[in-house]
Amino acid sequence: MKHSRAKIYNFLLLLLLFGPFALAQTIINTENMMIDDQGKLSYALNFQGDLNFGNIDLIQFSTAQQFSKSVNKHLFRLLLNYDYIKESGTEISSDYTGQLRYNYRINKNSFFAFIQAQNIKSLRMNHRYTSGGGYRQRIIQRNDNFWDLSAGLFFEDELYDNNLSTESQVYNWRYSLSTFLKHKFSEKLFINLSLYYQINTSNTKDYRLFLEPRIYYTLDKFNIFLDWTHRFHSTPYIDVFRTDNSMNVGIEFNL
Picture 1 (cartoon, rainbow, N blue to C red):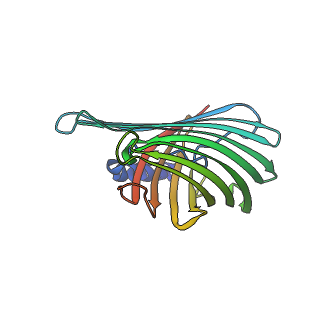
Picture 2 (picture 1 turned 90 degrees about the vertical axis):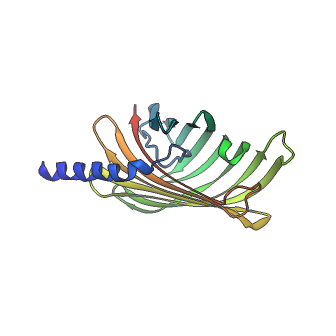
Picture 3 (picture 1 turned 90 degrees about the horizontal axis):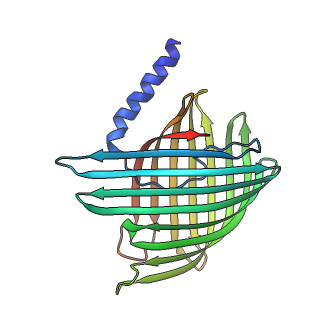
């Protein structure tokens, strides 16, 4: 019992150390929201946010939701995400992401297909529509720990600065290479790690990189998580920074 309490105190201390640097902006990662695999309809919700009034007037929050249904070898998932940031009366972000995803499983491997829609106000992106598919292979499986590799192809339609002189419409095909890892440190503490590398099929100098490790601590009714997100685009299509980083502390409910 004392050993378990020490783990809880150490984890709460970690939250206190990193919490002040947390940002509400995030993206949906299908690996991070845990799903039920027993055939019934399941639902997961996570939330993080911050409110400041006085010398600093800031409202920011993010919520991600996932509905999933498993039928024999078929897995269907609907993911919805919303991010909002308002500072000193100015709306900085009001962004959505929605994704419908299908997996056909062959043991621990699967073929997958998806469609996705999103906007990102901070990047002046009015819309981004993608659709594609691929194959995912289990490389290592040891109890609850695993390592997967995935490869696929998708099409993207992006619109920036709509109705402005700098309006830019982009259509691309991209190869997608990704890897996913889960490692349990104890019964209650584990990490999920996702890495995506997306390359323009007609211009290999145009690539995107996404990295997100997320640490979970599971409790009876909900889970606490801490993650760091790194995003890099080698050749942005408008005058924005190539790199974005964020840290998030939040809670996740599974029903």
